[in-house]
Image (cartoon, rainbow, N blue to C red; front, side, top):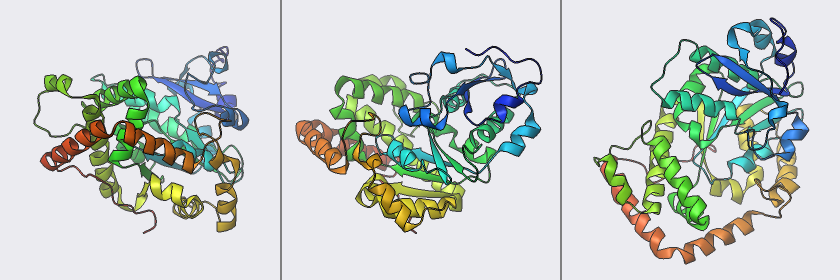
Length: 348
């Protein structure tokens, strides 16, 4: 861990975009920074403690001691990729690593800190200002003229309104996979996937619940994939409301559309975010190594066909369980007026 700078010397950290905000402590109103240059970001899956060493961190920086004028001067364009999980959002973020044009920041842990804060009953005076400062710090371009495209973790989905209000200039892509795809993704991951689905459900239940009319203690009677389906419906309903509420600032994209034609998708993302991604460059990226290795297991050969084969296999192996959960979810969606799909608008 880096030694704490003396009062007023945080300027070196805020002027160097390789020092990213890494953790927010609402009790002390402090930010911890971690040094993660672009090349390092390319070698790790996410910007969270599983992949960022404690040795790369600073001591906590009081928000009141940060040079806010320098942060304002250093800020750059910022956009978001929000997602429902298992929908190639990490792949899209990696594809947006285009020096001189954009950089995709993959699941910065600091946003999970704010998500945890807004999930609790604790309230502090400085959190909103700290969020704005954090987003301005995340927006600093790694190279001149770049925009930063932040892909938060799903755990931050319920604070999308706060993120968009804090940066009124930002636009967002909502990337989703269908319910059936989501259920197959959970099922094929076995025990780990089922635990993840329950964790996701219990994260969302207090903050973006469905009006299902069921008692909380009845949840334990549901099968794993029923829990997963509820978590997906919570996200779908909330993302649908986000797209409607923020209108021209949000576009919705199906992961199947992205995988079927990544070059066209990248061009459309570029047009929407105001990035210079002409068709020729988009085609080069779509045919690059980024789309031929696993987005979360770097170096492992993987592509759209490999993904399709995995999901087809999961659909066969878990056919009856998936069908049960899917049919149950359709009835639940009718009771809750929740959408069973989202309307794509990126190409509109």
